[in-house]
Length: 177
Image (cartoon, rainbow, N blue to C red; front, side, top):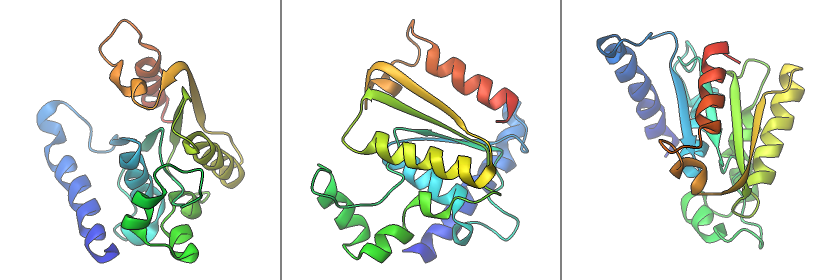
């Protein structure tokens, strides 16, 4: 339930803030990174004020990797039944649970990456996120299209000779946009 998600999101960020200095990090430069459903949850926390403490999300930015940032149960979505099991079937609830619905001019800096051979509709959802962020912030967010990759290989290639996504993420973090 949303009631339980609020403390979990806050607790996760608070936990990192309390411990990050031990590892040489800066509590003011925490970036959330999520892939697939994990990106949906990270984006929901980053954009939906109801899931954040009054002071805001407490993060410097968000990286969405092949994220299901729109909760929908369209026939062409092979994961429609899983979405319904998680969120239900009410169109208003599906829209309200979609991270893209809560984007605003105050949304944290965001980087979006999608694969060439993406799971059906995820690239469309991420394109919607790109559009909504650009429209709200009046500036396009960083968008990375990973040719030759599929939904899994976009993250499975970390620590291999292919460094493009890793370099893009590091540059996004360094620039803060």
